[in-house]
Length: 140
Image 1 (cartoon, rainbow, N blue to C red):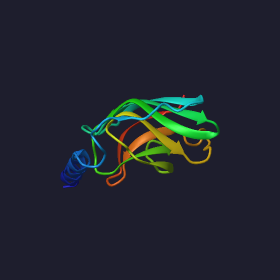
Image 2: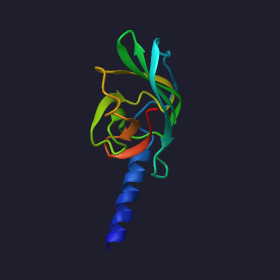
Image 3: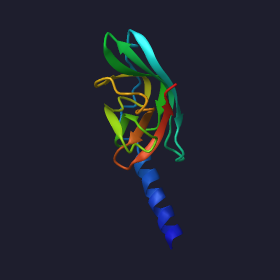
């Protein structure tokens, strides 16, 4: 019975987070921030089949303002995809940078303050509505 319940709940989450609503499917072409690259990460897809994000992430110091830049980015769509700087890949503690602008392209997000990247070691794409990890990477 527990196995059946697990399979049923997993199926519901997969279908809900894979629906084509939420972020724009028109590619974004934000300009690359100016300034110094502070950290880089390779975004790789999460463990849930069908929910995935891939690309490169960089944090720039743009005249004292920190910005996250996603390039070569692509993701499946979901109902409430967010971009987080997080302390772990489970998004237990995070800084919400906002809704994912689009499922592909180059995207820039403002980072409030200057968070300690020793604490916020991950950049992740997260389905907030169903708490599903689409992908992410750890800063290098």
